[in-house]
Image 1 (tube, rainbow, N blue to C red):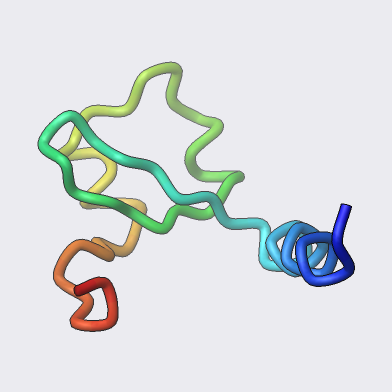
Image 2 (image 1 turned 180 degrees about the vertical axis):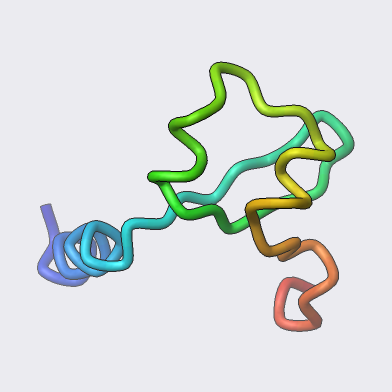
Length: 60
């Protein structure tokens, strides 16, 4: 595994966040602890506990 990829994985572990793509196509950045409370979170739940990354201009 490349050094950069390993650093990226370690960084995500430290942040304890996960990107989730909803059925609508929107992507959310979610805290893992909050996300683990739901078996299959709805989009409304994702909007409540996560940051909607879909509107981020850097994603274009």
